[in-house]
Image (cartoon, rainbow, N blue to C red; front, side, top):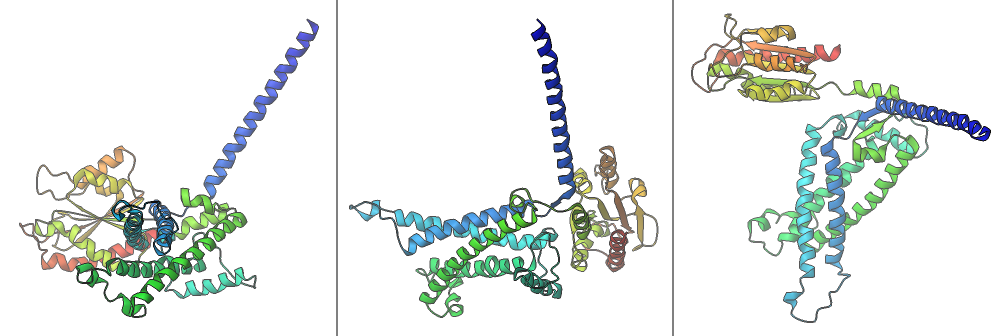
Length: 418
């Protein structure tokens, strides 16, 4: 009995120590997660990650099938009719079908260069890009340098993507489609690519040679690309490899905070109104003109709201800064622009052309009930000169768009300078 009573306190003590150790471990894990969250930066958006993996898969399939088409390394054992031996045909079909996916994916990436975030773009036309390229090259050559820290791709990586993924892909697409439609020169597709040989040496042989050489250049690029990605991950400990799955890189907390300020906040510009009633649709008509005038302003989203009613709740709730353009009946001189701040918007006198139409006030009220109103919100209302049935703006309303553009520019500048 003495031995048993002596053992029980020891067991209890060990259990207490184990529980305490588990609590300490859990606390450390929680702190590590919180620290990691502070250091996380969302770099690669989902469309970019999808493009990356689709492009990689297409290149590998195209390479394997392309090598087989040029030098068949498998010969099916079939001594009968050729009709029953379609292995080469299947390989060609896979090659061409993958080429179509590769092309569509490339077009999508070109679109996302314009649509995507700061890290999806490339400032290759700016002097700072080329100065950064020189310093990056010096850094890799272990020469004295002033290479800045890049969270996304550095200029050397960007340039290599422009050359291989950009120019290289265009060469592969043009030469590949020419070779595909070469046997049918009189078809619409054959004529569409008939000019390709004039760029690549003037003969079918030189076109095919370009196709092969660039394909092997892709293989060299992939080897270097994978090595450099692993090297960056290992040396910087920034999650480069995991970021191509999650989108997040990890930086010291001060750099993560700097990155948050590096990309200006997204501002949504929402044009609403009914374009069937002359000036009532001025918010919608002004939208493409504003988009053109503000083309050099980063991270803007333009939403054509027309008369969508409660469907506008999504764009309203999914932004932190919102500018609304609408016709407003303030009983002032036609063409006058009235600015309403966030607190004034729910009570503004919007124009309803039907008793069944849901006004923007109701949309804002719904967002308030859900506690998802943008932190910054301004409405620019334009007094209409006419609400008659028609799809054209009056001259008065059209003239006010230039003034409206300047006011929107100033509002964006004010928000982003604070």
